[in-house]
Image (cartoon, rainbow, N blue to C red; front, side, top):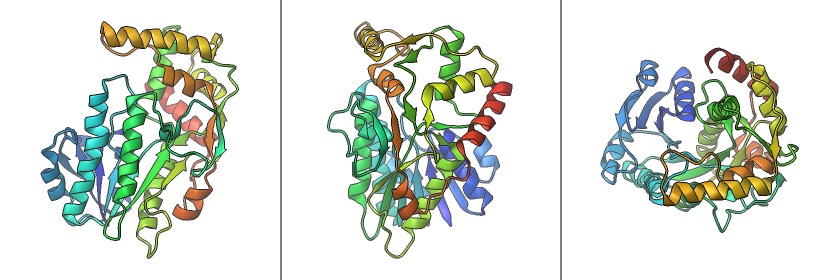
Length: 335
């Protein structure tokens, strides 16, 4: 088939493009710049900024003859003004939808996040029905991703079938966000266990995230897809104790084990103060911690994958132990 991947130079986007190319599909990748590495594999690159209202024409032309669009592009959960997230995550998604309609694309697979259901509580073995989109979002990232997911659901029709996936904390070799930050904070002596360290989370190895996206595209192509207009949690098969997993990663790459801890209440107070300073002064860069991140690091959030298995045919090809081992091996050499 012919596929288009937005955010084709990102961690998930480029692995998805590679998997599509390897199986013989014709691939177009869209991003704010060219991605020579991805293009060297055989993809065609299109430069378009989803935050630019004028990108719809470029997207529509790039989508001509495309069978499925994988919308992985988004502004990640950094500390930034709401309008920055809105322009990319909300308006950018609406532009992708508009271009799909104009070009007659029949299938759209959107990458969302479990964070759209975050409400500060533990989520243990939760299903999609258990966790509606949270009514109040603590960060602009969560707010805008939730709106984008709802827009994709509302766009589902007989002519444009849509589905959203919620992979949780994607990791693996070359992961550019979460693990490099963990390493940097630990090496600077600023990483603390938040809470009692017993909270479980569902992680998603990169190959498993890619597999879920391919499965979703296939499911949307069936005669009467059960997944149409819905969202699905996607993780590895088994949750992990988060801080034990982080400690295994750190010691695996040759760092000292974790030792110090801080309560969630204290972490949120410190994070709130930091957010205020970075907002009102303002200070450059990002605060060392946010209240949302502190809560996510101290609470459990892992999910029942029955929906993805039944409606998408999702099966994780890589188990968590293998995923962590491969990740450690790469970071030991490159991190």
